[in-house]
Image (cartoon, rainbow, N blue to C red; front, top):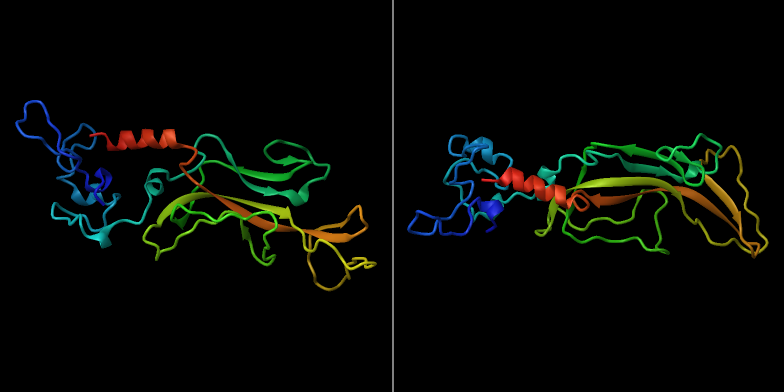
Length: 238
């Protein structure tokens, strides 16, 4: 709460022609971009870190007025603004004799969907993540999030971050083995919908490998730090 980004006022520095050190920031300095905030408090402060900052009497020590948005939430309103990024990967279509294109379909990998200038999805994030590891159990009745961010509205360390969410349909093991001598088969007319393969291992065991949806989350800004810093320098230049 004491950062320049929050208070718009830096530590006092010595300025040529001034007898005493002066604290400078957008709150008291003029510039040749937006001139100054004094004539438009509500407009200038509406997209900044404080709730209810409407005039010079704003209480910066009021913890309840702190915005829960991460800097990237406002400064990175869109992802893949230059080159498209892969948003969806369907492994279940692999192996088909379809026309191949590195951005839409490859026989050895399946189908893809790329997007650019996409709107992020927003989630609470405390800077800590969980990770799905090989062998962890999943619930086949719901989407598996491979790297869910920790944090929620009750976590004082969490902020709302913009994410790129990559979704995919990929195989998983329903059961590694069947009982000895058993052979898997599917009965028709049972209204059961499935997608997958019956796999026979080298030792003769048989198992079903169906498809399941999963998704991975990526914090926007992590791979665009240079661009993010450039934007910050330009938008905060006094």
